[in-house]
Length: 315
Image 1 (tube, rainbow, N blue to C red):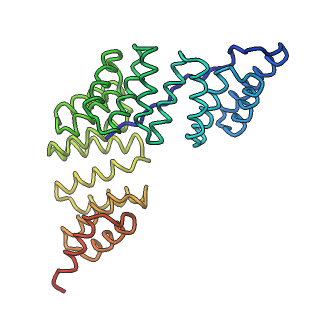
Image 2: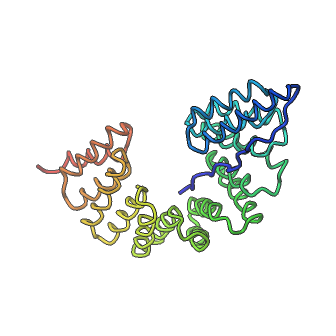
Image 3: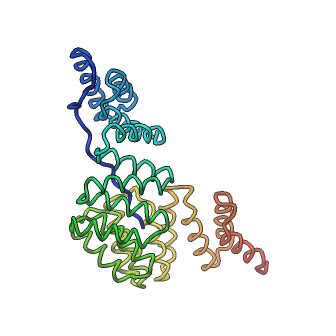
């Protein structure tokens, strides 16, 4: 139920300090930075990286080209190399909050949750009133399985910025994992009030409604999530679960089919569809789904156990 973490929107546009270079070189470095920014805005990341690299060659002690090249590398998928650029920007300018923020974000993406938390700590030491830093540190704590620390960070983010929909969604996820369903429902409902177009909030509230055994309300929320973002696969899975609770299994299978169409490797959708097929005694179809699960996840115990049960059925 975790909401995706945001990327820092700050992207410096060409005013930076140069050290011990000629006026001509300053102009050239600034021009390369501007060209890089233009390429970046057009999502032409390879050319942006080339331009920022040239700015760095001419002005290696200016932090902004390092930061901007890190951004271009991050969005081109080269996250590990981006980390080095963000680190260099922060080294050159220790109070560079955006560099610490992006360094934390990149480290967390690579699974270095402790490194991400350390980076966010540096940013918070500089800008203690920045809600987004607490929010993202909360994500890193949650990814480290420390929901207590994540909850404290989301609470702090919401103290600073009460109308922060993503923080409400992620705090709702912590409440959900702790089975505090009413608290989760309250956070998600508030998030939807603040941002009615937030598909993930509708999806997550649908999940909570399912766990409160309110399948009709769950379906309404999940339909809204699907309407807002037809590319999301999870609302179709969760809708299938709600429909199954109502014994509307033909519709449940249709919803699960939609999830699998969006992601042919969606293990959970195959698992649940196979379970529905088993319940309605379509054992051949259930068997096919469980076999597909084991192709995708050879250690899946649910699929192995259900296949054993199917094999033991009278012929």
